[in-house]
Length: 116
View 1 (cartoon, rainbow, N blue to C red):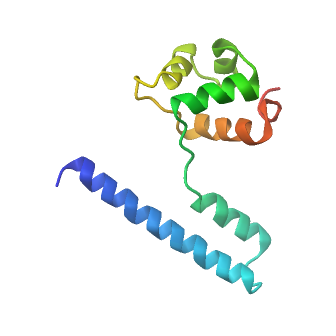
View 2 (cartoon, helix red, strand yellow):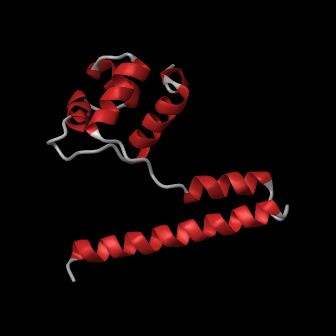
C-alpha cells in the first residue's frame, strides 16, 4: 500500500470518527445532556474543512469582496501570487488552514467580518 493510499484511508477513518462523535453530541443535545457551549465546540471541531476550488475563490473575491487580487491578498495576508495560484485551476493549489477559514467567513458574513 502506497503512502498516499495509507493517508487516504487514515483520513477516511478520522472522518468517520468525527461524524460519529458529532452524531453522539447531537443525540446528547436532544436530551439536554450537553451544554450549548459544548455543543457549539463539538460542531466546530467535527465539521468538515471547507474545500475552495479555483472558481469558488474567484467568485468570493469578485462577488463577495469586490476586490482585486492584490487587495484581496492583503486582506488574507498572503501574496498576490498565492491568490493567483488559488484562482488557477491548473495550479493544483487550494487555500487551507487560516486562509481557508477566512474565506469561509467572508463567504458567510462578508468581507467586513475580516477587513478592518
